Length: 117
Image (cartoon, rainbow, N blue to C red; front, side):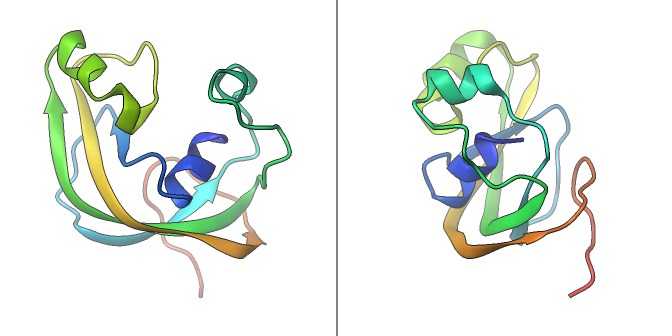
């Protein structure tokens, strides 16, 4: 969801939070859903004119961190930028982010999914 997809693709968001863990390590494409979290966009100082319903970038997962309490989660706020996330949480550790010059319109799905190249 935007603005988080933009933050991941631009390298500003280096931990992506999920309620589930993954063994996957490697590159993935970042898909921005058609929905916008306006409150988060305002809080993070990002305008609402963001690509939506498209693949907008890529990043690499190199590890996972488990958060067992709110204090641990709050300690990494600058890296994940999420508020009120449920515990336990898993933080996918990201690097190598790249925001694509031209988004590619595409329907998305929750979690990881395959696309036709």
